[in-house]
Image (cartoon, rainbow, N blue to C red; front, side, top):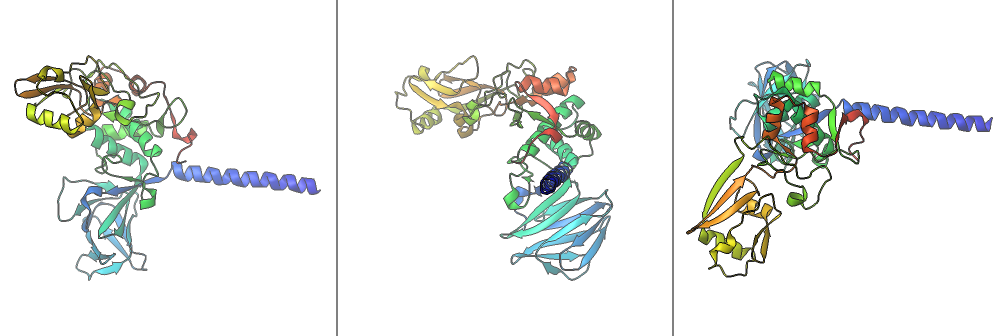
Length: 391
């Protein structure tokens, strides 16, 4: 009898654990994402305007107010708290506030610090929290609406649906891999390039379709973990190994010869600086040689290199790209008279997917899985439901 009870208790415990895991996974996989808006603006006040549906303002004070389409509220940071003003009412104070969408088809716009950017629409809810003389504006929105917004911000519009599907899977992979990036700051991701660019929801029907038709799909590496879904504008015909840019390599981020982007807009570039500026830069970077021999500075690699070399001197090309504000770290260099001419290829760090190459591939009939497989070596595209994340 005692053995039976022990076995029953064990089974019940396992069932409870399985149920808790199931609920946690279900909540996560169907959850919304918390995105900080206007991260770079440090807003001291914002104007919230309802553009569809209606919103209930919950200030956690027991006072609840409804805003309908076309109505506005002003949110101001004041002495470590928030002051909220609606219509012609007297402003009231609170520790934080949330604007809850009530119809399921709710959207709003925000104007911060008196600036009027291009009109950006957001869906879902908005939480406002005072934080060191600024306001954290946190959009709590549906994941696929967020993904579509990222695709629009990162990939533009007017492209093939297979390209948009590719970009959606990359954006979703990034989101899940770094879902807890800002969790200590009370949100998941920010809206600038520190995470992923997000300028609100998009009305582009093709981008929305691409996001929803790839719903849940992410990229796994050879070790069955989410990949670092790196991408850039144009690789100049050859992608860069990850170790050339971030020191640490990845088995799926290797050099790829790319014939697709070579005639695209950002395939080549040129920059000229004075010879004096060049030599001053080299001397400040540790060059010890004789600068009078100008021919030693000419540099004409046939493929991407990790370092620039002049005689016995070498220097990371990724650092040169940053210091001299170059479009890429893929270039040749020639000294002509009192000028140094950089003839470069590509735009961006060069690691992972080349956006302009992917656009050409998609336009020529390649599918998103073929495009992803071309730029990321040995990866698989799977549904997030079968992947362990947020560890």
